[in-house]
Length: 360
Image (cartoon, rainbow, N blue to C red):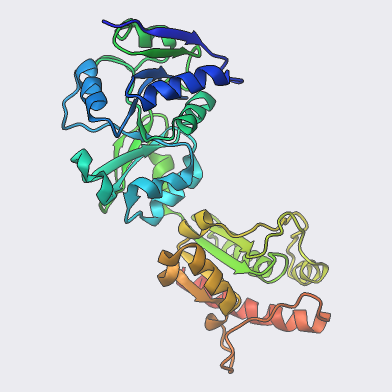
């Protein structure tokens, strides 16, 4: 038995000194009881084999049952996993931070862990996220209980069997959800829901069925806005408003701009109101979760591939789908041009969208 240091921390405004102390203990191979939004867990350094063996012994858990990693940034999945499917990015976008563990193929450098797959989760808990960030090491965090016993939803439950077995324990009261994370295995097709818990099976399956279409232009104030609005209208007319997520974004730094006056006018003539539109910059995350990416110019293709090279087979010039008898596949930017130029641009986009509706 060892002396377990216990600290009570405000879950909303956690004290930095305690987080840094706990992080140092993790880095040095210690075990820390820590809260998440689901249940309390035992944090441990994944890179320390002695610590891992100690954790298995404390939990009385079979060593062929690996622990999941907890991370503090969505992008960090790429540090630990490879061959990541589109569905993983869709689920992460929808449910992270939150009570979903996803299992992916492990990167080669994790093979020392004797596992071909790795479970990953980003908890929706300020203490957990900041502790992981401070530690700067990969942290596993199984539930703070002896295997076979209920996962603890408050600190006293967590401490009941583990006092004197761990080095540090954080008391942050009762967990927000009080139920374990759901677990989805995405390492192989078809995906499998291994545990239905905080997130219901139907919610996961709904995301899996949904297709995502992304339109990209320069400033996300005219061409991509037109394309998104027109596709939404066509799908609604066909009785298909659900099941397809339609997004638009731009490659420029600017965000928060409205649609151009000319764009609003042309779409108003179609019975579409885009007055609430606000521009967004294209991100790696939105590209990776999109099933089809449609850009206006070759320069946009280059930018998308710079952010996510693996998107190549899902990336197309929108004009490829328009029956226009010329070899120029760029749809020129109408910003600063007269309304007649906007109308020509709109005509090309409308025709291309008509073809897109038929194939999605």
